Every structure is written in C-alpha cells, then in structure tokens.
Length: 401
Image (cartoon, rainbow, N blue to C red):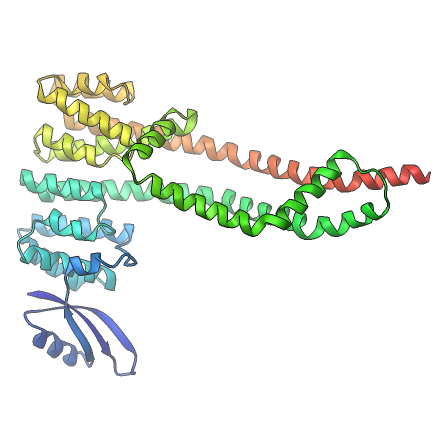
C-alpha cells in the first residue's frame, strides 16, 4: 500500500488534511468519501518532495520517542518494516507524524533502507538517530537498537525539560530587567536630565556618562539592531565552513565551565551510542563510525576518528580513546575495565550514566548561582541609574543651603 496526502472538506465545510493508506489514488478517494469527506486533492507522499521544502517542520521529540518505542515493539512481534509503518500511520493522531511516516514507507517501498529513507527527513530524524538505525540494520538487531534508542530519547527529553524549566525563570527575569533598563535610558532619563542641563550646573561624571549612553542608544538603536542581526547571520554562515567551525568548537572546549559541559554532553551521547550498538551486536569499528557521527563537537569527532584508526591497527579501545586526551579519564578507565571483563556494553552504559549525572550536577550548581548573580547585576545597574539622577539633585540642594 502507498501513502497519500489529502485535502478535503468535511460535513461542516471545513478544510481538513492528513494521510491515508491505499493502493491507488482512486481507492484513497473512495476511503475519504466513506468517511464523509469530499477530497479536493490526493497526492502520493514522497519524502524527497517534502524534504525540498525548507520551511517544513518535523516530528516533535516526544512523538519521536513514542514512535521509536512502538516501532521496536512491532518489529519484535514479527511484523515487516512496511507493516510496522502502516500500523503506526493508522495509529498516530498527529498529521505531521502520519505524513512523515507515510513518506518513509514510500521510500522503503521504492527500495531504500530505513536509515536511507529517514535521511530524507533530517528535521524529524537527527544524524545520531539515523546513525543508530543504520547500525541496527547492519547488525540485524534493529528492534533491540530501537528499544535502547527509545530509552535514550526518553532520558534526554527528561533532562531537556528539567533544564528548560530551570532556565525559564532566569530568562524571564533577564528579559524584563533589560526591557526596564532600556526603557529608562531611552524614554525616562532624557526627560529628567533636561532639568539638570537647563540649570547650567556642572554635572557629576556619572550623570554625564548616563546622558551620553542614553543619547547614544536613542541615536543608533536601529543600526545597532541591524548590526546584531547581521552579525548573527554572518556567524551562522561562517560556522557552516569546516575551518571556522573547528576553531569555534576548539575554543568552546577550552572555555572553563562551558567546555566541561560540552565535553560531558558529547561523551554521554558517544558512550550511549556505543553501548546500544555493541549491545545490538554491531562490530566495534562500525559502532565507532556511527558514534563519531553523533558527536556535535568537531574536535571530539576528529578525536573519535583518530581512535578508529588506532583500533583498526590493533590497539585497544581504551588506549585509543585515552591517546586523544579529549575524553574524561573516568570513561577511559571504565572502557578498559569493560574490555578486560568482556562487559563493554555495561561499562559504556555506566560511563554514560555517570556523565549524565555529572552534567545534571553542573547544571544545578550553575542555575543555583545564576539567580543571585542576575539579581545583583540588575540591582547594580538600577543603582547606577538612580545615583546618576540623584547626585545632581543633591548638589543643587547643597548649593541652595
């Protein structure tokens, strides 16, 4: 069966859209009419056609985790991949999920592998996801890999939600504080300082600096906004090139606190990927190649590629990773222990868990310190503005007395 995207009118005259499974477009139209829908357009879903639309969004993280777990369960039950996708399309209540899975199913019917078909939907299936699926297909343990992948997605989503909720309050406070300070400098301060300027009294240095900053912001804020937006766009384009991207990633790794955070995230993802693939029976070199593809930091990815060459020459995995001087020593020791005991998968999982726990602790400490630092910083800015306004008033009062 094929997947068809449709647009139709319901009984209330409203336009609805979705995906329906049928052998032909005629059968798809018949199914829609049986559901009291009047089809206006029925088109065969092709993943590559949708992938060519840059504005098309993908499956949400929560939905991707659910689909992955359901697919693993159906494959374990003995269904073929096409049957699994057909069942998931019928089961899903999200139009976007139905359309994406319909496109993947059409690509598989045309002869592509699951990972290859998902490659046409890179907004729905990230690089590391497709790398794990590719490794599972090569090893013949796709259902096991998908089950572990669903667990990993759930854990990552939980950490992301915890971090987002923790950052919500500081972000809101920052936005409100910056808006208030900007409003004071642009609208309030100029009206107040006019009184001081008309008095022809020598103003304190702090007041003169505040007046200068206010005049500067009022004069250049449109150009400053354009410059910031242009700079961000230029930086984004530059980071798409290999040289600037590597230099930027190397600088991030050398940053005192942020470097540890980035190293921990990539190490946890790399260890989790290796554990899933090794546990699924994927050969170590293939697992390492897939693991390199999940690294978001170019420097760490190159380190994994260098370690792959050492392993290919016969060196142990622990020595190869340790020689890069990029991964935490604890992970290297755990890998060495896993190689000696024959429990590499368990040790990799342990390393991933420890890195995730360390990451959560660092975030907790950072967020605990962030709130008082922000309050002090914003309080200091407001204090300077108030002092700059009060100092001339105090000077005038002293002259009067």
